[in-house]
Length: 376
Image (cartoon, rainbow, N blue to C red; front, side):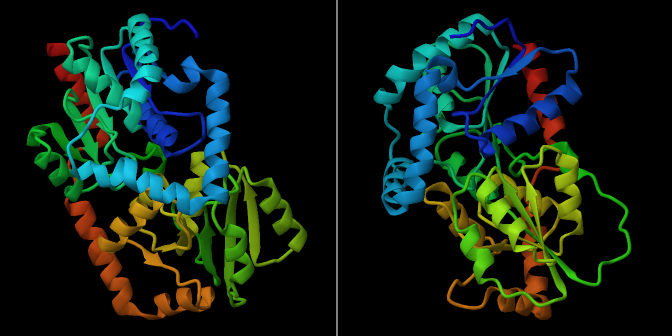
């Protein structure tokens, strides 16, 4: 286990998979640095920090499980961390035995003044420590999906940054004080708030396809089934899915531009800006980036577990269009763009979504919270 130096702030995702938990942690770090440029901070995955080899095995097993046994994973996830959320929360003794000692050691070494949790499990452990009087730092839950699962710590957590007003209501019913909850949306990196001067409008419709990064989901099937007209160009974010990238390169279709994993958020932001619509999976971060850019969202697939629950909630909010796999995908997209009423309904729901948010930015809210920490 690595030795840590004293820190002002600690950001806690979970597992090393490049998931939304890490993206949100990075977004929070960018906001935190803009307020406190001289402060010391670190992002720590307590699983990898305490059990490096085991973490690699678990990450690999997780990806294999959702790829080959999606229904089993979906049922287990729904039972363990979703359905039980509405019931009385119970201690997670098996997780505590593994991770509470690791978190306690991290806290002892780093002595942080404030903790930001972008995953439920370290939040759960910290909640217990806070209630036992073994943790005195300010604790902040930052939710990365559109629902509150039962693993999140609630008692002992000082502040909550939630994506939607319905999640705020859920926390209020759990006994959280109103002034401790901020409806911020899922925090995204500040680079995505940048806009670029529009160049001459492309004659073709521009679609951005996202979600193939880790080789999971049905992107290859999607692209095989799409029959797009000649006036449409598709940019495909292949991410780490090298097999998909090579397939698309060898296809040499002038209407499809495959792109490898992009580290530049500015480049991804430019792709969002030029896109007329985005076809993706209902991952919390990608959806939130698209909503900030006010782009129509077409959902073609959802991974088992949290993404399927996200899809249900996003559909209820009227923020996404779900693709019917039994119908021609290209026609469904074309029908949307020819239906002005449907487009008006989307932007009406989108405006309502943003109207329910705090007027203060995430950076301002973090500044308020850290000011509170200085008074403690």
